[in-house]
Length: 381
Image (cartoon, rainbow, N blue to C red; front, side):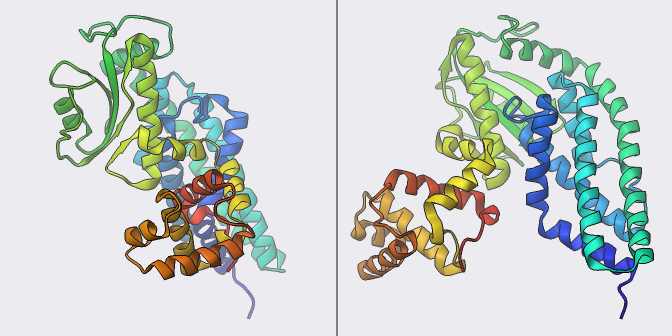
């Protein structure tokens, strides 16, 4: 039976669904090269917001492809990204350039899937017409709506307060206008996001800290070290916490810590993330391609193997954390000592070397493998 245009479109949607992480990673890499202002290494606070926007746009487009329609509105995540760009001072033209790059990636994938799935030119052309109608329509919508959202965000009082904070963060100013916050203090930077982000930050900064709204559901804060945040209020929000740092430079450093912690939390889903606990994960996140290559090179055949491979990696990680003590690893895992010994032998066969060699690199690779999750290439089964 001949393949129909509808079936080609469904195959294209299935391909997007199956490879969404790879699509986003490649798009982010191209964005970082072509639009440096949107690179998360330059603005790590963009990481979580930009990823949420990209995923929401892909979901919206897949619905549009199914219904042969043009999306009626930019998703809330795209609006949030636009407002954040306004507050960061990133030109709206740069933001729209990222939409064009993403558009090009999706269009290339569409051509590839459709060309491979049907030998009939008329069916391929019909499928591509439907995809192009939705894709170009959405790009036109974004080009019309986002500049208006951007202009509105730039004019608010919140933006003026945030602009004052950003001038300090960027080293342009050494004073915070319209605030009584002491920049000479030993600071702890905070980032809260979610429905009750403002409530959470207000509770943590009530004793004299500083809070500034970045987005409708994202708030930055600073408190004096020692005034919290050990007693974190229960709220429908998530929190990232920087390391304590003193003075003007410390104000900047602890903030960077917190927003890097937020970027990691976007993948882990943790309700509270302290940067000191996830600094290694941030290094992986800041260069995903390099991190994955490192993991694959260090683990070799230990990188795959499904559930059994996961148990082997868990056992090796526990063994290394326990100072290479089989008994301590067995106790931590709740298994017999001989089970740990067997798993270690099997892991070493896959590694092609003893576990104790390059143990530091191996421990990092195992930790990154857990963090990267399903994005890790399967080297073996």
